[in-house]
Length: 287
Image (cartoon, rainbow, N blue to C red; front, side, top):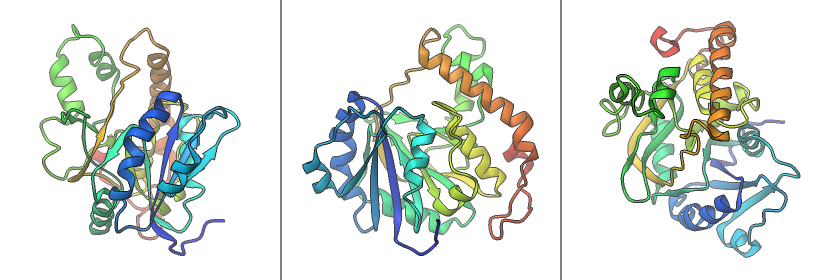
């Protein structure tokens, strides 16, 4: 049963799907965690999504993390909800990839940012690649044109479509309000995330971040970006090839999101952030 008695400030969860994820977890996320969480009462849960995956017990002890092991493979959203089930009493919930290296003081900066923005239900920080190049993690809603433009170099008006989608002309050097943010780093108001039902586990992979952002907006809260802190992320973009399993999965998830956008989201009650009663949000946020 959920309670609102404070146990800590941030509960974080990262999902490990493969041996490559395990290597990146141990090379990137875990070494950066102590400095990133300094000054914050935080807990880190690692979900091992295959029973044969193992994490060194000594590393677990020194990192102060908790390991959750699935007896069978589960979808990404389902695994995030598994971590969320352990977050009762925490003020904020962080879902992040194992291939993330967090900056020193990252969690304290995000807590301060969320505390200053009462309207914010979901946020993210600035992301760089491991070589220091900016990663565009703020997004406008996807369209079929965006999906094709990002994969076909000959697609008409490809560059302006991608620039608008990735908000390259309006974000990253200042606070902004994207439609949604990349699922590799999502910082939530924990109570709100639980109130809207957590992640939709029907999204096995891809678009679960679009979906939860859309439901955050529908709850009368905003999605925000802050450049005040940062992290490094090894981006794989496994769905870039139109002939890959990842692309087919991405397309199925996007079609599910389109169905929800047309037939499910409009029927959801719009909730005010303070009392959970019917309220309103700007029409532009819901387009």
